[in-house]
Image (tube, rainbow, N blue to C red; front, side, top):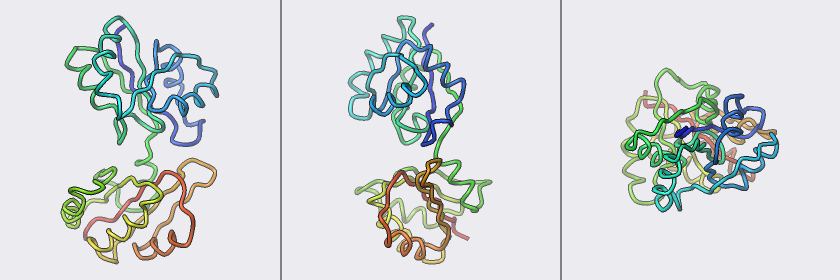
Amino acid sequence: MSKLIIVPTPIGNLKDITLRALDALSKADIILAEDTRTTAKLLNHYQISTKMMAYHKFNEHKVLHQLIEKIQENSMVALVSDAGTPGISDPGYLIVKKCIENNIEIESLPGATALIPALINSGLPNNKFCFEGFLPQKKGRSKRLKELADETRTMVFYESPHRLIKLLKQFVEFFGQEREVSVSRELTKIHEENFRGKLPDAIQHFESKTIKGEIVVVVEGKK
């Protein structure tokens, strides 16, 4: 069976894996993993022995043609990222696009992604929102922040721990001090934290501690 299966994996708590995801990972001929060491922990926990191959942003262009040929040889290939749903701020777009171009069947399983739990528990309006993921680190960053200053929908961002304070200070600079923000850290894990308040309060809170873990920042839109 020639098929690519997009398989979401837990963002923290291993119990968040779905039965369909486990079935797909068990039956696949090969699993494409962003980091095989990280995925090995999940597979070992559920006693899955499927062969893995590294597929990440540094090699996805190089191995793409080889992978398409592999799938066309009646292989069922499962794509996972380190955490969450592939393609959401992680590799996935290129191989999905190439599979479509080659009439290869694609099955995308529902499952974990950090942005939805963070949005829901933020307490900010969630009937309409925009997902920005990681902002550009250098070129285009200020331009994008200026554009977002007038965004009326709730905004969702991803950020790394060592850049969180910089991000929050830039939000104050471009959005003002009165915007409400929710910062979710280590979602689904033992030390999960959800801070809610004004932007200056968030800066004060996180400047006073060592910041660890994956972070989702949800910001109120312009009123």
